[in-house]
Length: 110
Image (cartoon, rainbow, N blue to C red):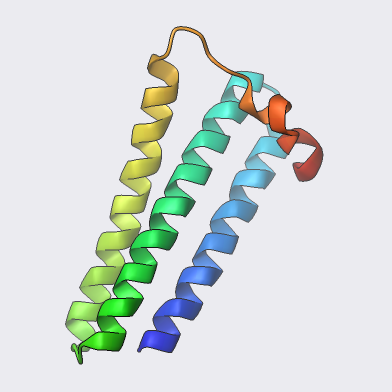
């Protein structure tokens, strides 16, 4: 189960980054590109760290499929919530920083 969880985490992280990059490349609104970037990066980082934690749990303790699936669903739901939270935090700032242009994400995703 540990190997499956680790592989699944890497696949989902890569898919999340790919989808975020595609959304950035197809958006015409610079603010929306920054929202997508903040949401994608924060959810991917949180999901990766939490997925790693689940992998350690599965490695160190023999748990059943029900617990493993529940932990995976919990990580996925939490990851989405964290991404939305960071997006809201980004939008709450009166002076919005153009992160996408500053670090060149536009060029990477095109």
